[in-house]
Amino acid sequence: MRTYDNPVIGGFHPDPSVCRVGEDYYLVCSSFEYFPGVPLFHSRDLVHWRQIGNVLDRPGQLALGDDIPASAGIYAPTLRYHDGRFYMITTNVGAGGNFLVSSDRPEGPWSDPVRIDLPGIDPDLAWDDEGNCWCAVSGVRVARIDPATPARCWRSRSRCGPGPACSIRRRRTCIASATGGT
Image (cartoon, rainbow, N blue to C red; front, side, top):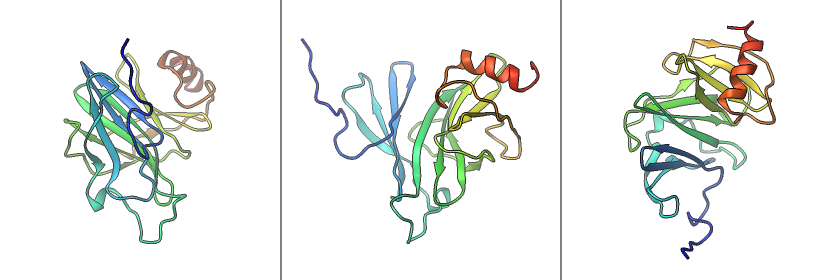
């Protein structure tokens, strides 16, 4: 019988989000008021993890003042992989709201932030069969977004389940009713 210690990542790594790409697993977690932000880990078995960097490793990516309280900063990042690109979306609670960054490689370099004009926290991303990107936040608000262009956000205030991480099938039903069946 194989055993492992719990937690599998020792220390303070709250709000984990795991993304699988082939045989590799990547994990990000909240970093709150600390810089560099959003630690990034790699594993092949979900038990043995190694930190491979931080997603937000340049001051221009993360606006944190010297007086930022522990109740602000980066909360609950979500890591996704789509069409050969990694996306990390999160909320800077103390400054700026929701934003995403992207990279061709998990170890970076990661892009400058793209602000998402959608109120709420704990954002999540999913792509539908047509390639549209959808963002869900607490409350449960769902909006179609363009991850490359912050101005392209189609707002929807629909509700589709118990939390922002509802499945794409549930989201598709919710999206169709919120956008007039499109």
